[in-house]
Amino acid sequence: MAQSMDISVFQQPKKGNYYCGDSYYYAETEDGFICALADGLGSGEFAKESSQAVMDVIKTNTKSSIEHIIKQCTQQLAGKRGAVLGILKVDFQEMNYSFSSIGNIGMMTISDESVKNRNIPNAGYLGGYPKPFKILRDKISDKMVFVMFSDGVNSLDLSSRFFLGKDVDKITESFSHYFSPIPSDDTTLIVMKYNA
Image (cartoon, helix red, strand yellow):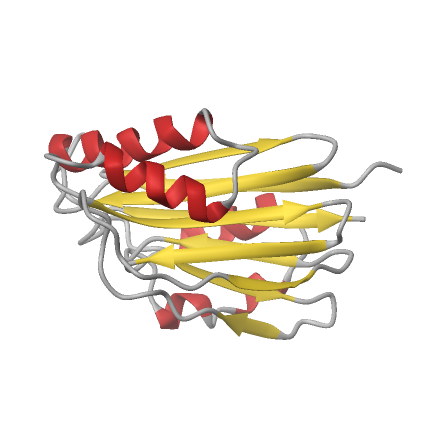
């Protein structure tokens, strides 16, 4: 059986806004998978413009390294409002993943044994000039779940038991019922499961 990723997304704009300032993109090939989530600074249409500019760069650089993608995104945001960014790349051949986050885009992994781990994002935001950042690299295992989220999702939300499930659609559906119907911030939750 070919390796693959199951994915499900929940997204809702901040109360009173038509535009969600969060943008996301994902793509899968036979060699791997990439998922990115950006949150434009502020909210509304100008925040959406910045986060979408980042996604446009990622769409044309899916095979590039995370380092190269972040460099290109930084250049693209010159003169714009700025954005925070999280990028996950899964390499099916090497059986590993890489993740980097600049700003408050978080990621949690959940092993098949239900062990949760959260990353610590790099401080700051992308805004036209280079920032230092770290990249987390680790091995993947069958049925491993990745949860990427913007700052509309908090630690209490992430402690909910439904995150221990393995059906990505049920996780986002449960989150949508649990989540406040009037969010105080743009909210995006992306749940992904690796299938070996």
